Length: 259
Image 1 (tube, rainbow, N blue to C red):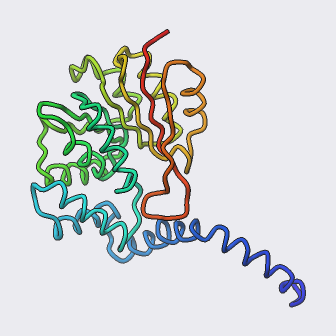
Image 2: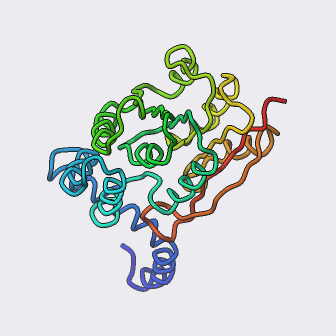
């Protein structure tokens, strides 16, 4: 049995760790423990819970109202991982600067970023949003349509990204991708980027924006972006969505063209 004296000796170390990593404890509590309890209490998924909140708080057909309700829920009720409003401003700015006509999103989740992208696109532009989880896709479909975007504006593709990318030209008539947003499994960032490079769908000036490259991180993706010579690149420093104190970042790559 540990003596009180030994336990007391470790107390300063324990307090130091708690203070240093307090934001990670907050993330653990909000993202894991609260979700687990709510799953048991409500009997429905977190994604369905956020949809129910949006349905009762947002104005149908108004993407700004949908996004505001989404942000309120994530700030006040439960944590859910998507780009959020602060990093979302970086995305908004890049979309306005580049005015892309064909956009690919990898990782729809609940549809937050799909709505954010679609509202910023010029008339006639189209977003292809890829989500491999069927449950998440059902929620995303409802939120995207609630926001006022039809199939012509946002097409939701429910398949793994590595199956979709090679078929974009044949199955969906895509000849060039002007903008790609990555926010799916981080281990997929590099292989999917390399698949896009080999697909012929990236042209000079195509933009790739990847979220969460600092936390949880995508080091192999960043290494390739820096060393391949195919991109102008920068990392926009930020904090994790809805959790202050955890450093994060978004990688912006501009395709120069094949060597």
